[in-house]
Length: 312
Image (tube, rainbow, N blue to C red; front, side, top):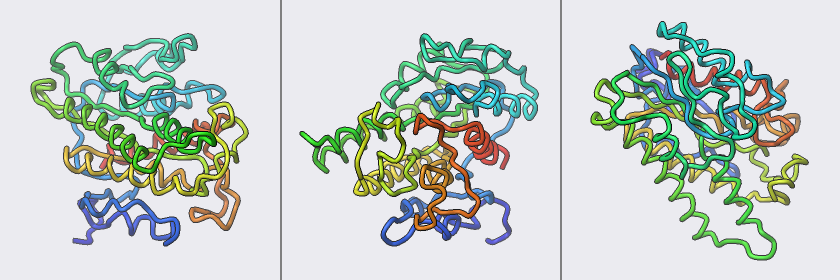
């Protein structure tokens, strides 16, 4: 092919040839033969057109968190861009804000936009979030956008590095398989024409981490509040295994995944360390002091990745 039109001219390994190494490899996404967008920040399996409703599911990355201002949250930035692109009724300013008591959007539904994402959510919360945003078959052609899996990964990391009683490698892989199965449930629901007679699209993020693949969980001070500390370089292959599971589903269901993990690598707490595998000159940290949430620039870049996939 080679004409640069986003229908499979490149593979993921080519997109990230300047990052990662033999010791700290890129996830093996190309084993699933995904179609990679010309932008190199995600797949290009769906031709996303004529969207009538947009629904955000997921965790605190999607809800948004202080100190980032509400207008900078990736869902807020995307809502404005999507309203313009598809001629939708934009959400109110209140929809972009956070209900700090419940950790959700201050308004669930506004204009043609909904958010059922929630602080602390894990992939086993997808079912409840689906029920919260969809009440029987949805006739509007729907775009579902989500970040989910970071809290699952943090929980696994905590249990795998527990100094008293760490879980075994087999248990880690079993836990990851469960996480992938829960995403499978969302994609099975969204791609079932009984649920969306006029169609639905899904674009989801893979799972990032804040150590730039060093595994230095303690590099961010606030990580101690989530019981994350010490060195966990052996955790990096687990992250690849998790994200490979996500890619397998993107291909199997014809949905799209953005490479949030790979794009944020080099923008974590080792962003200025030339010896890391993702080092980029002049990079900045896209994670805020909470360790696991994006800065306003991180949110802006995340919105850009999602929009690149939606636009191609």
